[in-house]
Amino acid sequence: MIMSIAEPLGVGLTSVGEYFDLELDYKETECPSGQEMIDALNGQMAEGIKVLGIRRIEDGRKNNAMSLVAAASYTISWKKDSEKDPVEALHRFLEQKSIMAEKKTKSGVKTEDIRPLIFAMEETDVPADEKEDGMNAAFRLFCSSGSAANLKPDAVMKAYFAFSGFSVEKWDMRVRRDELFANDGNGGYISLGALGEPF
Image 1: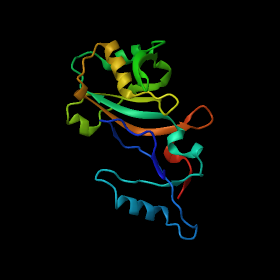
Image 2: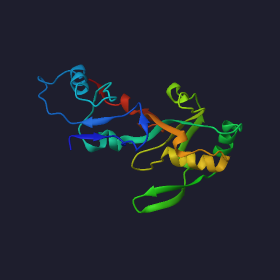
Image 3: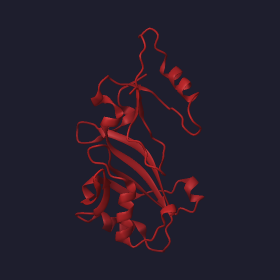
Image 4: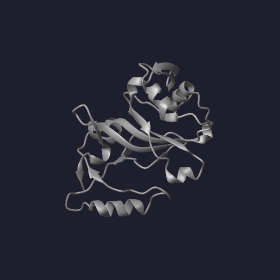
């Protein structure tokens, strides 16, 4: 496989921060510049998809983007249908020692505590294009992602809605992935776009 996508998006989600690995076989003297690669790739991309940058990484499975993903950030916009304060409910939601939610796995659906997988969650501005569609509340979610411990934002919001009493139809919520992160080796996280060397 010469191309792999880091943590492919679920159906119905949008994104402004995606990464893929591409294996190229060039002699050092014949290798095009990073900008030449960007231009060539963008000349073949589907509408709405644009390559923004290229980084060179060391060969090896442990260095590919898919295996490095440890966290993700999302903007979740939704249509609030009452005068209740979503932030007050969010604070109470996050104060819980455990948050039980259903997660789909290869072996079926199981219930587990997702609280340790939610690293941060806070109110944020509704993106302008989603305001036009009637969305009037938004959260920023930073959570575990990747093959080791993957948390889907819809599972978090389903648990939040059940806890808070807000009633939201499935089509009245939008999820946008903003960034993917790897462990930085010091207990924190670093954007996948900051790994490797500029090319």
